[in-house]
Image 1 (spheres, rainbow, N blue to C red):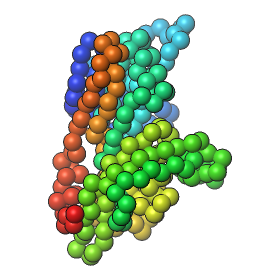
Image 2: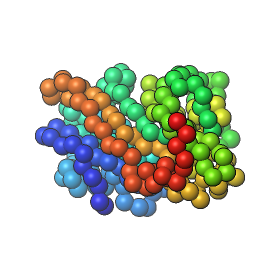
Image 3: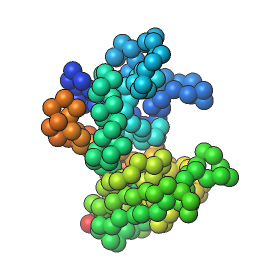
Image 4: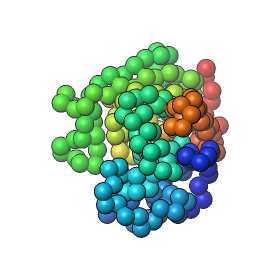
Length: 242
C-alpha cells in the first residue's frame, strides 16, 4: 500500500489517507487497511494485549477515524503513552480538525454553525441522521468559494470544522440543511449522486488540517495537506463564481 507520510518523529506519524481505503479491520473488510499498513510500519504485530489498559495494539496506534471515502490527515501513535495522550486530546476536543468539502447548492451565509443531534438510523444501520434523541453534534462552516457548472447548477466549496466527532457528522449536517456533499452515495440521494459522479469520481471530503499539542513537548503542532489531484481536477471543471 502506497501511503504518503506527512510528518514523523519518534512519537507519532501523520499520514495522508487515500480515499477508498478503510482505516480499521473488521469482519466485513477483505481489502488491506491502514491498520495493516500501520502494523507493518510500527512492527507491532502479535503483541500480547493481555493486561493492556489501552487499545493501542488493537488499533495499531491509529488515534482517530476517517470514513473510507474521505481522504486526508490521519494520526498514528508509535507507543501507548503517546496514543493515550492523543486520544485524550480528541476526547477533550482540544484537537482542531478542518475539512475541505464541495457541496451542492449556493450557501449564501459565509459563516455559520450547525448544531443538531445525530445518531444511527434505527431503520438503516448503515446510515446516520439527525435524530431528536441523538448525540449532540456541532459543525462550524466557512464558505470559501462558489462554483457553477455548464448547466448553471451552483456548488459551494467550504471549510468544515467539526467541534464534535460523530460518525458521518459533516455529511449529515450538510445534507440536513439542503447542501449534500458532492458524490456522497449514502446521503445525497440516488439521482443527485448519479449526476455528481459524472464529474466527481469520489466523495468530495478531505481532511486538510489537523492541529494538536505534541504529546512530548506540549507545543502546538499543525499539519496540512492540500486537496489531492483528483479533487483539484473536479474544481477545474467548474466555473469559479466568487
